[in-house]
Image (cartoon, rainbow, N blue to C red):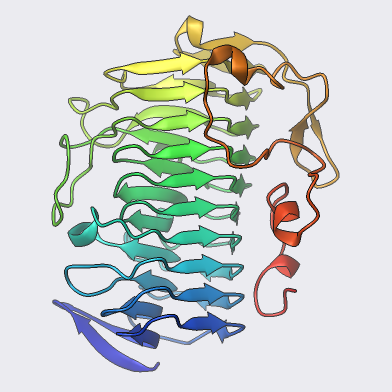
Length: 368
């Protein structure tokens, strides 16, 4: 390992540290250390902003500690970090907490707007933490990533005003769980997932208190969250409202609209804790799975006409009742791209990758 550092009472090894620096790029590296104790393989700390970590491979980590951690000075965060086109696999720490692949921010800095982007990364076979991607800051974007065969989710654990868009979560206990204010879960694709409880496919959480100040480490009650335009096919759980936290702090002003949820098993919508206020609008439910307790005015029972395409993804066909139906239910202008089409009109590599799950050849050291 590179050296040993201390953050408060926390002592850890580290391989690569960007400290008090700006505009650094970490690219085309293989990280595969043999650490025997807690270690962070890449850490950003101190003063400095605008780093990029791209086209690397992080592999085979059985010890505590993250592949990548983004911090800053004790009272601030490194801003505008971009983490893209990396391959993260086999973080297999067996402890209860501390084996995330990526963590940005922490409870002490959760209300800082960091403007980070985590995009076009592939995560496979990571089982070291319930949070594969752990967001603990505000105003960040997590988009166009693929999580396959992990035991852990994309979790907005702290922070507000984040966007989770266009990710593929496949064939594991992969999901998205969120707390905090104005979180947007938009246009993601879920299929073949078996998670329940905190691993549920989409988990809208309760809070432990109405709002959190920096330094508080409970659960921030969700306010003004949006879950829209997602596709969920053949998952053990689909949408669960009221995970963790306290029933006295349920979601407030939750919007759930224009999602397609299809499964022949389980319950399609499980409202374990009723939101204080909510809008359920133009969701489509299909399959032998039970509707659950979604309000009757908030969905249609109609076949969405999903067909598996050449990439093994269920996509809407030309005659699907889900197409062009969002305008009937209000002006939900949340998508930044049309992610549901089978054949994207744009020709650039990244535009193509928005429309299918990532493969090993798309990311890491040898990707184009």
